[in-house]
Length: 169
Image 1: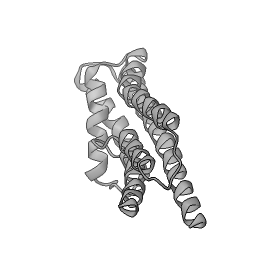
Image 2 (image 1 turned 180 degrees about the horizontal axis):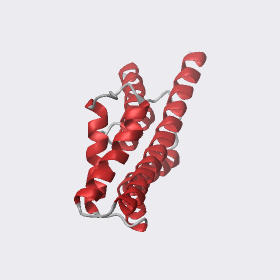
Image 3 (image 1 turned 30 degrees about the vertical axis):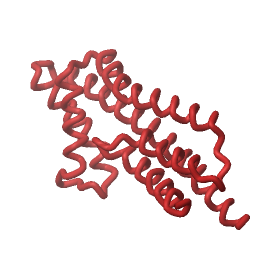
């Protein structure tokens, strides 16, 4: 049973990293589940304090991931269509051409393009739309980086604990 928990812990941690950049998959909570599974392994020493702190951080990052793009977009003159455009652009980046999911350029460009189109459709002039789209894009990048760093940290922790367990066995 413990081996299954360890395997699922590693899978959740890696899935958390993927969820940091793929929309619809909540990266930090999934990575935290990996830590929880490791906590449930009797041979691994994960403190309850770490589990609680990591859960709190995952919750804060998840909330910020929704608030930061809106705040930056609004601060730079953006509107709800710009935010929606950014989110739609992010989804398009997964399937979109000419930049597919394998291309980091697509993940960077499509949210900006989506936000720009959203602002233009809402009737804003091009300079204002560009500034708003920049806010939406910066919010997206900030949220993505927060999620990615958190998930990488948890993944590294999980892997180090598993390697340490294997070394002592």
